[in-house]
Image (cartoon, rainbow, N blue to C red; front, top):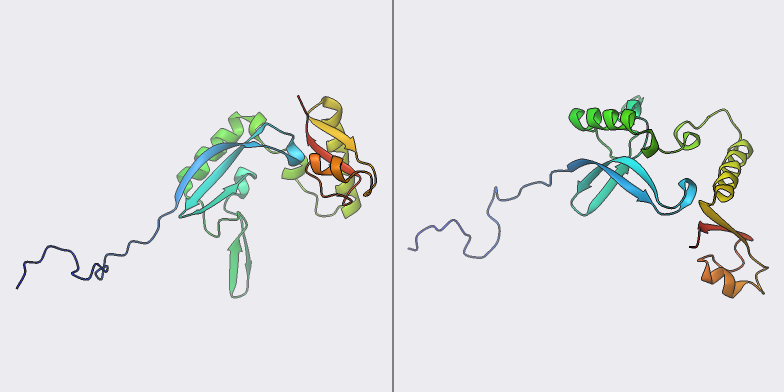
Length: 171
């Protein structure tokens, strides 16, 4: 009889060897590369790494662990599917208070549920206009689908899909 070395002779795990994944929580700043905040904008976030999955929360500190409840169930609204640990939520709130420049713009943080879709689109257009005017974003009017396919592709747009394209300002 061979001595027990602690390893399975077949190489398979023994009962009790399995260890469930533990999420790794952190407070990070990410660089927003495009979209509604403008290229290069740094945003404060709570990040959860869970195996190969990375999730982030960019919202208001007081809503970090907000939930919606209904008879027989409920869910967290933070996108993680679980509560953020208290210590992480406190650090996020402190950093949020201290670094106003790392927050999402107000129009993304405080959506008005009573506004129409047209009013929200107008607010978004006005914000984009301000970013274009300040030089944070460039604006290109693309020709029609037949003439503009090559130009559209050079800017990353799908040819014929839109007449407007917003992108990072070219240096």
